[in-house]
Amino acid sequence: MFSILHISDLHRSSRDPITNAELISALVADRERYLNEDPPIRAPDAIVVSGDLIQGVGLGAPNYEAELAEQYAVAEAFLGELADRFLSGNRGAVIVVPGNHDVDWNTAKSAMTLVAAADVPPNLAAALFSDRGEYRWNWKTRELFQITDAQAYARRLNAFGTFFERFYHGVPELLRVQRDADANLFALNNGTIGVAAFNSCHGNDCFAFHGYIPREVIARTHLDLNTETLSFDLLIAVWHHSMEGPPYRTDYMDIDIVRGMIGRGFRLGLYGHQHHAQVAPHEIYLPDRERMGVVSAGSLCAGASELPIGVYRQYNIIEVADDFGKATVHVRHMAAANLFGRATLDIFGGRSFATLNWGPRRDDLGRPINAGANRIRAAVEHAEVAFKSGDSGACVELLLPYRSTLDAYGRRLLVQSAHSSRNWGVVLDVTDPPNTIEELVLRVQTFTEERSYDGARQALDSYSKKLALDAAMEDELRNRITAEEKLRQ
Image (cartoon, rainbow, N blue to C red; front, side, top):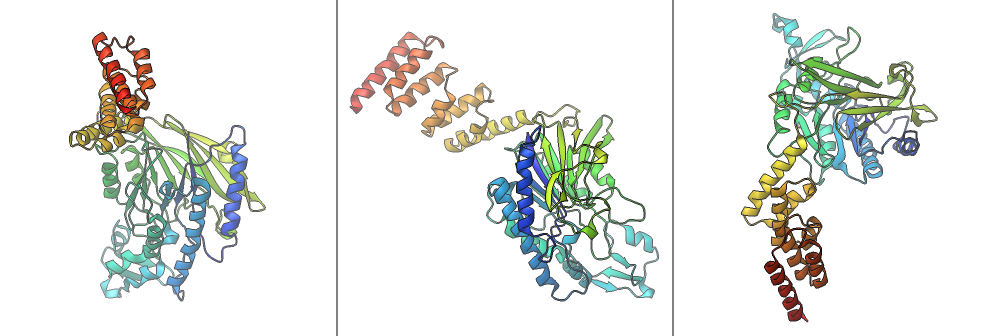
């Protein structure tokens, strides 16, 4: 299995009632518990943080920039130590998205201008509720504002961006992780799992509390994750806002946005915001049924006043099955003494876990996508180009991860390129045992280069008859071994 530690709504600040040390200690202690449960839960291979890293600062707060910086310092220290203790410091397997608490209200407000009564647009409702509307209504003062400085408004996530840039600075082999991106891309589990980390705070500010991901962002992300060099067995989407809630609330995201993800092959969606765990399948028909497992994590460390009635602090462990066709979501909660343990949830029938199933990803013709075969084919194509251009080392690097599943041509390319680059260890590893006469010859030559003459003779003794090696060629190889041995004595 592949296991994901899914946390959300950290609400970190220097004045939080629970410290970083208490949280880290509680998570480490709980890992020891679930590793020994029956059945045991796999330790995390990756960490997903679905927004609201900090508590945020209210409108009109003095020195709000310094306060935001201080809160992000607490969040960064927490996530850094979490990566160290759970992922051996691999921040490339930590996926972080912003939430509404990460939006700087004071910067957003500074980009707005009060609208005079004479300048109110004639169709105010349409202006307020359009996807990219520039008008905002303040219910407290019953005033209308207009975003008049787009550049200043875009900086309302500046503090999050600064944290984000620091957190991933110098991290190697990231797929596409950039500050201020609408969606960042991660590859997990040796390239078998692709993750799109979406910013669902488009248009979210001090007066507009909804979640939104532009549809063109989802479309472009889908295209970027489906190229000739990328092929994933499972696509995961991460965002912050929930899609369901009580009436008369405005801080939710249109569920149609999630349906657009389902139709583009995303099979697991992870979010937060609502401060309680929820697991549900979402389906569309095109015309065949396509399903996505959608999972919410409760708040890891929100204060009591921010938690729904009867809900404790929570987090999830998500175990993805080896066939990438289902996942089991385990909910852990903090029920006593600031310690986490197995949750007992009515929504799960009194259990602490729920399992979600989904069908395989399909191509435009409705056929199941064999992502593994696509990855191998792309690797062989690029390795062939590298080999023909004289870069045998790059060829070996491309093909080596697939050495046990390569077809005859790919295997031949790997062995030849390893021999050309004098990577004797790879030659001997791949040709043990040799599948063809050519592999046997290269194996013998490699042993000879390594001055392992007994190994060269043993290879001929073991495989010459099995592979029907011509007697004359065998004699010639043995003579070469003897001559080389005498020459180097």
